[in-house]
Length: 490
Image (tube, rainbow, N blue to C red; front, side, top):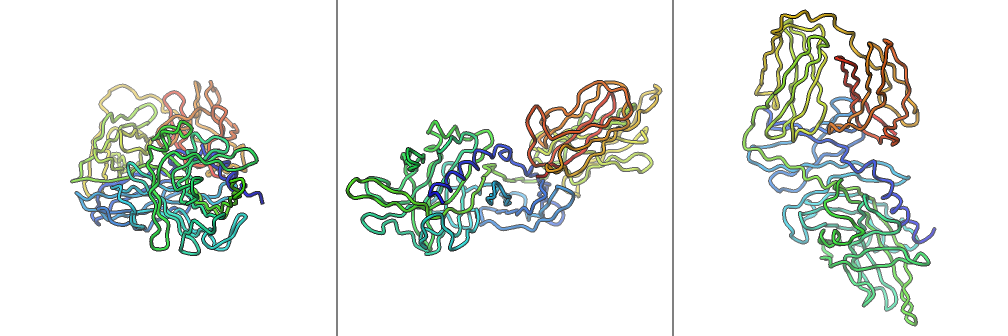
Protein backbone atom coordinates (compact mmCIF):
# COMPACT_ATOMS: atom_id res chain seq x y z
CA UNK A 1 0.00 0.00 0.00
CA UNK A 2 1.36 3.46 -0.86
CA UNK A 3 2.52 5.13 2.34
CA UNK A 4 0.47 8.25 1.51
CA UNK A 5 -2.66 6.41 0.38
CA UNK A 6 -4.35 7.07 3.71
CA UNK A 7 -3.77 10.82 3.50
CA UNK A 8 -5.00 10.94 -0.09
CA UNK A 9 -8.14 9.02 0.91
CA UNK A 10 -8.83 11.48 3.71
CA UNK A 11 -8.33 14.46 1.42
CA UNK A 12 -10.75 12.92 -1.08
CA UNK A 13 -13.25 12.29 1.68
CA UNK A 14 -13.05 15.92 2.76
CA UNK A 15 -13.60 17.17 -0.79
CA UNK A 16 -16.76 15.06 -1.23
CA UNK A 17 -18.51 16.23 1.94
CA UNK A 18 -20.42 19.39 0.91
CA UNK A 19 -23.82 17.61 0.97
CA UNK A 20 -23.19 16.83 4.67
CA UNK A 21 -21.94 20.26 5.74
CA UNK A 22 -25.23 21.77 6.85
CA UNK A 23 -26.14 20.42 10.30
CA UNK A 24 -28.64 17.67 9.41
CA UNK A 25 -30.15 17.20 12.85
CA UNK A 26 -32.40 20.29 13.33
CA UNK A 27 -32.28 20.09 17.13
CA UNK A 28 -34.99 21.87 19.10
CA UNK A 29 -36.18 21.91 22.69
CA UNK A 30 -39.39 22.25 24.64
CA UNK A 31 -39.71 24.10 27.91
CA UNK A 32 -39.44 22.28 31.25
CA UNK A 33 -42.35 19.86 31.67
CA UNK A 34 -44.09 18.59 34.79
CA UNK A 35 -41.66 15.65 35.07
CA UNK A 36 -38.68 18.04 35.39
CA UNK A 37 -37.35 17.33 31.89
CA UNK A 38 -37.20 19.24 28.66
CA UNK A 39 -37.82 17.38 25.40
CA UNK A 40 -34.98 17.47 22.88
CA UNK A 41 -35.97 16.46 19.36
CA UNK A 42 -34.00 16.03 16.17
CA UNK A 43 -34.28 14.46 12.72
CA UNK A 44 -32.61 11.25 11.58
CA UNK A 45 -33.20 7.58 10.88
CA UNK A 46 -29.79 6.35 12.07
CA UNK A 47 -28.72 5.46 15.60
CA UNK A 48 -27.96 8.90 17.03
CA UNK A 49 -26.45 9.43 20.47
CA UNK A 50 -27.53 12.42 22.57
CA UNK A 51 -25.31 13.93 25.27
CA UNK A 52 -25.95 16.71 27.79
CA UNK A 53 -24.06 18.68 30.42
CA UNK A 54 -25.80 20.54 33.24
CA UNK A 55 -24.06 23.45 34.98
CA UNK A 56 -20.65 22.62 33.48
CA UNK A 57 -20.58 18.97 34.59
CA UNK A 58 -19.08 16.19 32.47
CA UNK A 59 -21.08 15.02 29.47
CA UNK A 60 -23.67 12.31 30.07
CA UNK A 61 -25.46 10.22 27.46
CA UNK A 62 -29.24 10.46 27.45
CA UNK A 63 -31.62 7.71 26.44
CA UNK A 64 -33.22 8.53 23.10
CA UNK A 65 -36.13 7.00 21.19
CA UNK A 66 -37.76 7.21 17.79
CA UNK A 67 -41.13 8.92 18.26
CA UNK A 68 -42.14 9.09 14.58
CA UNK A 69 -40.62 8.43 11.17
CA UNK A 70 -37.46 10.50 10.99
CA UNK A 71 -37.87 12.15 14.42
CA UNK A 72 -36.08 11.16 17.63
CA UNK A 73 -36.43 12.46 21.19
CA UNK A 74 -34.55 12.47 24.50
CA UNK A 75 -35.74 13.65 27.92
CA UNK A 76 -33.13 15.86 29.62
CA UNK A 77 -33.34 16.95 33.30
CA UNK A 78 -33.43 20.72 33.66
CA UNK A 79 -33.92 23.34 36.37
CA UNK A 80 -34.84 26.94 35.54
CA UNK A 81 -31.79 29.16 35.96
CA UNK A 82 -29.42 26.30 35.14
CA UNK A 83 -27.33 26.33 31.97
CA UNK A 84 -27.74 23.20 29.87
CA UNK A 85 -25.49 22.16 26.97
CA UNK A 86 -26.46 19.38 24.57
CA UNK A 87 -25.07 17.73 21.44
CA UNK A 88 -25.48 14.75 19.10
CA UNK A 89 -23.16 12.11 17.66
CA UNK A 90 -23.68 9.49 14.94
CA UNK A 91 -21.58 7.29 12.65
CA UNK A 92 -22.14 6.84 8.91
CA UNK A 93 -20.22 5.22 6.05
CA UNK A 94 -18.52 7.42 3.42
CA UNK A 95 -16.24 6.01 0.69
CA UNK A 96 -15.99 2.76 2.64
CA UNK A 97 -14.74 4.67 5.69
CA UNK A 98 -16.50 5.16 9.01
CA UNK A 99 -17.32 8.84 9.52
CA UNK A 100 -18.46 10.26 12.85
CA UNK A 101 -20.76 13.27 12.54
CA UNK A 102 -20.95 15.14 15.84
CA UNK A 103 -21.43 18.49 17.50
CA UNK A 104 -18.06 19.56 18.90
CA UNK A 105 -18.28 19.68 22.72
CA UNK A 106 -17.96 23.30 23.81
CA UNK A 107 -15.56 24.10 26.66
CA UNK A 108 -16.28 27.19 28.73
CA UNK A 109 -12.62 28.03 29.42
CA UNK A 110 -9.21 27.72 27.75
CA UNK A 111 -7.77 25.60 30.58
CA UNK A 112 -5.24 22.98 29.43
CA UNK A 113 -5.46 20.08 29.59
CA UNK A 114 -9.23 19.80 29.95
CA UNK A 115 -10.78 16.78 31.66
CA UNK A 116 -11.63 13.90 29.36
CA UNK A 117 -15.28 14.14 30.43
CA UNK A 118 -15.46 17.59 28.82
CA UNK A 119 -14.45 16.22 25.40
CA UNK A 120 -16.33 14.08 22.88
CA UNK A 121 -15.22 10.69 21.60
CA UNK A 122 -14.54 10.60 17.87
CA UNK A 123 -14.18 6.83 17.66
CA UNK A 124 -12.32 3.75 18.87
CA UNK A 125 -9.81 2.22 16.45
CA UNK A 126 -8.81 -1.44 16.27
CA UNK A 127 -5.56 -2.58 17.85
CA UNK A 128 -3.04 -4.13 15.47
CA UNK A 129 -3.91 -2.24 12.32
CA UNK A 130 -1.37 -0.13 10.48
CA UNK A 131 -0.75 1.55 7.14
CA UNK A 132 2.90 0.72 6.43
CA UNK A 133 4.68 0.66 9.81
CA UNK A 134 3.48 -1.10 12.95
CA UNK A 135 4.60 -0.22 16.45
CA UNK A 136 2.39 -0.08 19.60
CA UNK A 137 3.14 3.62 20.13
CA UNK A 138 1.99 4.37 16.55
CA UNK A 139 -1.18 2.27 16.90
CA UNK A 140 -3.99 4.71 17.75
CA UNK A 141 -6.95 3.34 19.73
CA UNK A 142 -9.20 6.24 20.78
CA UNK A 143 -9.45 9.91 19.82
CA UNK A 144 -11.44 12.80 21.32
CA UNK A 145 -12.06 16.44 20.41
CA UNK A 146 -13.49 19.63 21.86
CA UNK A 147 -13.41 23.39 21.37
CA UNK A 148 -13.54 26.57 23.38
CA UNK A 149 -14.21 30.01 21.93
CA UNK A 150 -10.51 30.35 21.09
CA UNK A 151 -8.96 26.88 20.94
CA UNK A 152 -9.29 23.43 19.40
CA UNK A 153 -8.55 20.45 21.65
CA UNK A 154 -7.63 16.87 20.74
CA UNK A 155 -6.71 13.82 22.81
CA UNK A 156 -5.16 10.63 21.44
CA UNK A 157 -4.73 7.20 23.04
CA UNK A 158 -2.53 4.41 21.66
CA UNK A 159 -1.79 0.75 22.26
CA UNK A 160 1.34 1.40 24.34
CA UNK A 161 0.04 4.18 26.61
CA UNK A 162 3.21 6.15 25.89
CA UNK A 163 4.16 8.65 23.20
CA UNK A 164 7.93 8.62 22.68
CA UNK A 165 9.09 10.99 19.95
CA UNK A 166 12.64 9.67 19.51
CA UNK A 167 13.62 6.08 18.72
CA UNK A 168 17.23 6.80 17.77
CA UNK A 169 19.34 9.59 16.31
CA UNK A 170 17.83 8.83 12.91
CA UNK A 171 14.30 7.61 13.78
CA UNK A 172 11.44 9.71 15.20
CA UNK A 173 7.71 9.37 15.84
CA UNK A 174 5.10 11.99 14.99
CA UNK A 175 1.59 12.10 16.46
CA UNK A 176 -1.00 14.34 14.79
CA UNK A 177 -4.57 15.51 14.87
CA UNK A 178 -5.20 16.45 11.25
CA UNK A 179 -7.72 19.24 10.54
CA UNK A 180 -9.55 20.06 7.30
CA UNK A 181 -11.95 22.85 6.44
CA UNK A 182 -14.27 20.96 4.06
CA UNK A 183 -15.44 24.20 2.42
CA UNK A 184 -12.00 25.23 1.24
CA UNK A 185 -9.96 22.03 1.20
CA UNK A 186 -7.47 22.09 -1.68
CA UNK A 187 -5.78 19.14 -3.36
CA UNK A 188 -3.11 17.62 -1.10
CA UNK A 189 -3.41 20.25 1.65
CA UNK A 190 -4.31 19.60 5.28
CA UNK A 191 -3.54 21.09 8.69
CA UNK A 192 -2.34 19.31 11.80
CA UNK A 193 -1.57 19.72 15.46
CA UNK A 194 1.76 17.86 15.58
CA UNK A 195 3.52 16.35 18.58
CA UNK A 196 7.08 15.44 17.67
CA UNK A 197 10.68 16.21 18.44
CA UNK A 198 12.83 16.19 15.35
CA UNK A 199 15.51 18.84 16.04
CA UNK A 200 15.39 21.76 13.62
CA UNK A 201 13.26 19.75 11.18
CA UNK A 202 9.89 19.19 12.81
CA UNK A 203 9.34 20.37 16.39
CA UNK A 204 5.87 20.25 17.93
CA UNK A 205 3.53 22.87 16.49
CA UNK A 206 0.58 23.69 14.27
CA UNK A 207 1.41 22.94 10.63
CA UNK A 208 0.08 23.18 7.12
CA UNK A 209 0.65 19.75 5.59
CA UNK A 210 1.07 19.33 1.84
CA UNK A 211 2.36 16.70 -0.57
CA UNK A 212 5.36 17.80 -2.59
CA UNK A 213 7.38 16.27 -5.40
CA UNK A 214 7.77 12.53 -5.18
CA UNK A 215 4.69 12.35 -2.92
CA UNK A 216 6.80 13.51 0.05
CA UNK A 217 4.93 15.35 2.86
CA UNK A 218 5.82 18.99 3.37
CA UNK A 219 5.29 20.79 6.69
CA UNK A 220 5.00 24.58 7.10
CA UNK A 221 4.60 25.76 10.69
CA UNK A 222 1.74 28.19 11.37
CA UNK A 223 1.86 28.43 15.14
CA UNK A 224 2.42 26.69 18.44
CA UNK A 225 0.52 23.90 20.13
CA UNK A 226 0.06 23.07 23.78
CA UNK A 227 0.93 19.44 24.45
CA UNK A 228 1.31 17.05 27.36
CA UNK A 229 1.28 13.31 27.96
CA UNK A 230 -0.80 12.38 30.98
CA UNK A 231 -2.69 9.29 32.05
CA UNK A 232 -1.45 7.33 29.06
CA UNK A 233 -2.92 9.87 26.61
CA UNK A 234 -1.59 12.70 24.48
CA UNK A 235 -3.32 16.06 24.90
CA UNK A 236 -3.07 18.78 22.23
CA UNK A 237 -4.51 22.27 21.75
CA UNK A 238 -4.04 25.07 19.23
CA UNK A 239 -5.41 28.56 18.64
CA UNK A 240 -8.22 28.62 16.10
CA UNK A 241 -7.04 32.01 14.88
CA UNK A 242 -3.67 30.54 13.81
CA UNK A 243 -5.60 28.33 11.38
CA UNK A 244 -7.92 31.10 10.23
CA UNK A 245 -4.96 33.37 9.47
CA UNK A 246 -3.75 31.03 6.72
CA UNK A 247 -5.38 32.09 3.42
CA UNK A 248 -5.75 28.49 2.21
CA UNK A 249 -7.72 27.51 5.30
CA UNK A 250 -10.53 30.02 4.84
CA UNK A 251 -12.11 32.40 7.30
CA UNK A 252 -13.57 31.24 10.58
CA UNK A 253 -16.31 30.76 11.50
CA UNK A 254 -17.20 29.42 8.07
CA UNK A 255 -20.65 29.36 6.50
CA UNK A 256 -21.29 25.78 7.59
CA UNK A 257 -19.32 25.95 10.85
CA UNK A 258 -17.73 22.53 10.27
CA UNK A 259 -14.25 21.02 10.47
CA UNK A 260 -12.97 17.53 9.70
CA UNK A 261 -10.66 15.80 12.23
CA UNK A 262 -8.48 12.69 11.78
CA UNK A 263 -5.91 11.34 14.24
CA UNK A 264 -2.74 9.97 12.59
CA UNK A 265 0.80 8.81 13.35
CA UNK A 266 3.97 8.75 11.26
CA UNK A 267 7.55 7.59 11.58
CA UNK A 268 10.31 9.75 10.14
CA UNK A 269 13.74 8.38 9.29
CA UNK A 270 16.48 10.95 8.66
CA UNK A 271 19.49 10.26 6.43
CA UNK A 272 22.42 11.71 8.42
CA UNK A 273 24.48 12.28 5.30
CA UNK A 274 21.97 14.30 3.31
CA UNK A 275 19.57 15.33 6.07
CA UNK A 276 16.71 14.08 3.90
CA UNK A 277 13.74 12.75 5.87
CA UNK A 278 11.72 9.69 4.79
CA UNK A 279 8.13 9.49 5.99
CA UNK A 280 6.07 6.37 6.65
CA UNK A 281 2.50 6.20 7.95
CA UNK A 282 1.84 4.32 11.14
CA UNK A 283 -1.90 4.48 11.75
CA UNK A 284 -4.88 6.75 11.36
CA UNK A 285 -7.95 6.70 13.60
CA UNK A 286 -11.60 7.50 12.98
CA UNK A 287 -12.69 10.59 11.05
CA UNK A 288 -15.05 13.17 12.53
CA UNK A 289 -17.06 15.87 10.80
CA UNK A 290 -17.60 18.29 13.67
CA UNK A 291 -20.35 20.92 13.73
CA UNK A 292 -19.49 23.94 15.81
CA UNK A 293 -23.05 24.87 16.78
CA UNK A 294 -23.04 25.79 20.47
CA UNK A 295 -26.30 24.23 21.67
CA UNK A 296 -27.26 25.73 25.04
CA UNK A 297 -30.48 26.28 26.94
CA UNK A 298 -30.83 28.84 29.72
CA UNK A 299 -34.24 29.99 30.90
CA UNK A 300 -35.23 31.63 34.19
CA UNK A 301 -38.91 30.82 33.68
CA UNK A 302 -41.26 29.78 30.91
CA UNK A 303 -42.75 32.37 28.58
CA UNK A 304 -45.97 31.44 26.81
CA UNK A 305 -45.79 31.05 23.01
CA UNK A 306 -47.16 33.91 20.90
CA UNK A 307 -49.52 33.25 17.95
CA UNK A 308 -50.04 35.83 15.22
CA UNK A 309 -51.65 36.13 11.76
CA UNK A 310 -54.17 33.36 12.39
CA UNK A 311 -56.28 32.85 9.26
CA UNK A 312 -58.60 30.16 7.87
CA UNK A 313 -59.40 30.47 4.16
CA UNK A 314 -63.07 29.66 3.63
CA UNK A 315 -62.44 28.70 0.02
CA UNK A 316 -59.58 26.24 0.47
CA UNK A 317 -59.77 25.35 4.15
CA UNK A 318 -56.12 26.40 4.55
CA UNK A 319 -55.31 27.39 8.13
CA UNK A 320 -52.15 29.49 8.55
CA UNK A 321 -50.49 31.32 11.44
CA UNK A 322 -47.08 32.21 12.90
CA UNK A 323 -45.60 30.78 16.12
CA UNK A 324 -42.95 32.55 18.23
CA UNK A 325 -41.50 31.61 21.62
CA UNK A 326 -39.16 33.85 23.61
CA UNK A 327 -37.00 30.91 24.75
CA UNK A 328 -37.07 29.22 21.35
CA UNK A 329 -39.20 26.33 22.69
CA UNK A 330 -41.05 24.19 20.16
CA UNK A 331 -44.71 23.26 20.85
CA UNK A 332 -45.51 19.89 22.41
CA UNK A 333 -49.21 20.57 21.88
CA UNK A 334 -50.31 22.04 18.56
CA UNK A 335 -53.88 21.43 17.40
CA UNK A 336 -56.86 23.18 15.88
CA UNK A 337 -60.21 21.92 17.19
CA UNK A 338 -63.45 22.83 15.42
CA UNK A 339 -66.83 23.31 17.08
CA UNK A 340 -67.67 19.66 16.46
CA UNK A 341 -64.61 18.44 18.36
CA UNK A 342 -62.64 17.43 15.25
CA UNK A 343 -58.89 17.90 15.78
CA UNK A 344 -56.30 18.89 13.14
CA UNK A 345 -52.51 19.07 13.51
CA UNK A 346 -50.87 22.11 11.86
CA UNK A 347 -47.37 21.44 10.52
CA UNK A 348 -44.35 23.80 10.61
CA UNK A 349 -42.61 25.08 7.51
CA UNK A 350 -39.32 25.31 9.46
CA UNK A 351 -37.82 23.64 12.54
CA UNK A 352 -35.73 26.67 13.51
CA UNK A 353 -37.56 27.93 16.59
CA UNK A 354 -35.02 30.65 17.32
CA UNK A 355 -37.29 32.78 15.12
CA UNK A 356 -40.91 32.92 14.05
CA UNK A 357 -42.14 29.67 12.44
CA UNK A 358 -45.05 29.52 9.99
CA UNK A 359 -47.61 26.75 10.45
CA UNK A 360 -50.38 25.50 8.18
CA UNK A 361 -53.06 22.81 8.00
CA UNK A 362 -55.91 21.86 5.67
CA UNK A 363 -59.21 21.88 7.56
CA UNK A 364 -62.12 19.84 6.19
CA UNK A 365 -65.03 20.24 6.52
CA UNK A 366 -64.50 23.98 6.84
CA UNK A 367 -65.99 25.15 10.16
CA UNK A 368 -67.52 28.46 11.15
CA UNK A 369 -65.61 28.53 14.41
CA UNK A 370 -62.86 26.69 16.23
CA UNK A 371 -59.94 27.04 18.60
CA UNK A 372 -56.16 26.79 18.26
CA UNK A 373 -54.47 25.13 21.26
CA UNK A 374 -50.71 25.46 21.83
CA UNK A 375 -48.36 24.48 24.67
CA UNK A 376 -44.56 24.34 24.91
CA UNK A 377 -44.54 22.31 28.15
CA UNK A 378 -47.85 20.38 28.24
CA UNK A 379 -48.74 22.38 31.35
CA UNK A 380 -49.59 25.91 30.24
CA UNK A 381 -52.10 25.93 27.38
CA UNK A 382 -52.52 28.91 25.07
CA UNK A 383 -55.95 28.94 23.42
CA UNK A 384 -56.79 31.19 20.46
CA UNK A 385 -60.48 31.22 19.45
CA UNK A 386 -61.37 31.66 15.79
CA UNK A 387 -64.73 32.53 14.25
CA UNK A 388 -65.77 33.22 10.65
CA UNK A 389 -67.35 36.66 10.49
CA UNK A 390 -67.96 37.02 6.73
CA UNK A 391 -71.50 36.84 5.35
CA UNK A 392 -70.39 36.02 1.81
CA UNK A 393 -71.08 32.63 0.26
CA UNK A 394 -67.91 30.56 0.60
CA UNK A 395 -68.68 28.92 -2.75
CA UNK A 396 -67.51 25.54 -3.89
CA UNK A 397 -64.53 24.14 -2.04
CA UNK A 398 -61.96 22.65 -4.40
CA UNK A 399 -60.93 19.05 -3.92
CA UNK A 400 -57.96 18.57 -1.60
CA UNK A 401 -54.61 18.20 -3.32
CA UNK A 402 -52.99 14.84 -2.85
CA UNK A 403 -49.56 13.47 -3.73
CA UNK A 404 -48.65 9.80 -3.59
CA UNK A 405 -44.92 9.04 -3.58
CA UNK A 406 -42.52 6.53 -2.02
CA UNK A 407 -41.33 7.56 1.44
CA UNK A 408 -38.46 7.25 2.06
CA UNK A 409 -37.12 7.94 -1.43
CA UNK A 410 -34.15 5.62 -1.90
CA UNK A 411 -31.40 6.93 -4.19
CA UNK A 412 -30.88 3.47 -5.69
CA UNK A 413 -34.51 3.49 -6.90
CA UNK A 414 -34.46 6.93 -8.59
CA UNK A 415 -36.15 8.30 -10.60
CA UNK A 416 -39.24 8.13 -8.42
CA UNK A 417 -42.87 8.27 -9.50
CA UNK A 418 -45.12 11.01 -8.09
CA UNK A 419 -48.90 10.85 -8.57
CA UNK A 420 -50.97 13.99 -7.98
CA UNK A 421 -54.74 14.36 -7.92
CA UNK A 422 -57.28 16.88 -6.70
CA UNK A 423 -55.87 19.35 -9.22
CA UNK A 424 -57.80 22.14 -10.91
CA UNK A 425 -56.93 24.68 -13.56
CA UNK A 426 -54.08 27.09 -13.09
CA UNK A 427 -50.40 27.31 -12.22
CA UNK A 428 -49.19 24.20 -10.38
CA UNK A 429 -46.05 24.35 -8.24
CA UNK A 430 -44.18 21.55 -6.50
CA UNK A 431 -41.51 23.17 -4.35
CA UNK A 432 -38.99 21.56 -1.99
CA UNK A 433 -37.90 23.19 1.29
CA UNK A 434 -35.36 22.16 3.88
CA UNK A 435 -36.38 22.21 7.52
CA UNK A 436 -34.94 25.68 8.00
CA UNK A 437 -37.67 26.91 5.66
CA UNK A 438 -35.29 27.59 2.75
CA UNK A 439 -36.75 27.07 -0.73
CA UNK A 440 -34.39 24.66 -2.51
CA UNK A 441 -36.16 24.77 -5.87
CA UNK A 442 -39.15 23.55 -7.86
CA UNK A 443 -39.86 20.08 -9.22
CA UNK A 444 -42.74 21.48 -11.29
CA UNK A 445 -43.90 25.00 -12.06
CA UNK A 446 -46.33 25.05 -14.99
CA UNK A 447 -49.94 25.45 -16.03
CA UNK A 448 -52.09 22.39 -15.41
CA UNK A 449 -55.66 21.78 -16.60
CA UNK A 450 -56.08 18.12 -15.63
CA UNK A 451 -57.37 16.75 -12.30
CA UNK A 452 -54.50 14.25 -12.22
CA UNK A 453 -50.82 14.34 -13.06
CA UNK A 454 -48.17 11.61 -13.19
CA UNK A 455 -44.50 12.59 -13.19
CA UNK A 456 -41.03 11.31 -12.30
CA UNK A 457 -38.28 13.03 -10.34
CA UNK A 458 -34.63 12.02 -9.96
CA UNK A 459 -33.88 14.10 -6.85
CA UNK A 460 -32.30 17.02 -8.69
CA UNK A 461 -33.18 20.68 -8.18
CA UNK A 462 -31.51 23.35 -10.31
CA UNK A 463 -29.18 20.69 -11.68
CA UNK A 464 -27.95 19.53 -8.26
CA UNK A 465 -28.95 16.30 -6.53
CA UNK A 466 -30.29 16.56 -3.00
CA UNK A 467 -28.37 14.72 -0.31
CA UNK A 468 -29.79 12.33 2.25
CA UNK A 469 -32.10 14.02 4.74
CA UNK A 470 -35.59 15.18 5.61
CA UNK A 471 -37.39 17.68 3.36
CA UNK A 472 -40.76 19.38 2.96
CA UNK A 473 -42.74 19.16 -0.30
CA UNK A 474 -45.16 22.05 -0.87
CA UNK A 475 -47.81 21.59 -3.58
CA UNK A 476 -49.83 24.67 -4.48
CA UNK A 477 -52.39 25.61 -7.12
CA UNK A 478 -54.58 28.66 -6.74
CA UNK A 479 -56.05 28.62 -3.21
CA UNK A 480 -55.20 24.95 -2.72
CA UNK A 481 -52.08 23.94 -0.83
CA UNK A 482 -50.63 20.73 0.56
CA UNK A 483 -47.42 20.21 2.52
CA UNK A 484 -45.86 16.87 3.38
CA UNK A 485 -42.49 15.70 4.63
CA UNK A 486 -40.37 13.14 2.84
CA UNK A 487 -37.01 11.50 3.37
CA UNK A 488 -34.21 10.83 0.88
CA UNK A 489 -32.00 7.87 1.77
CA UNK A 490 -28.94 6.42 0.09
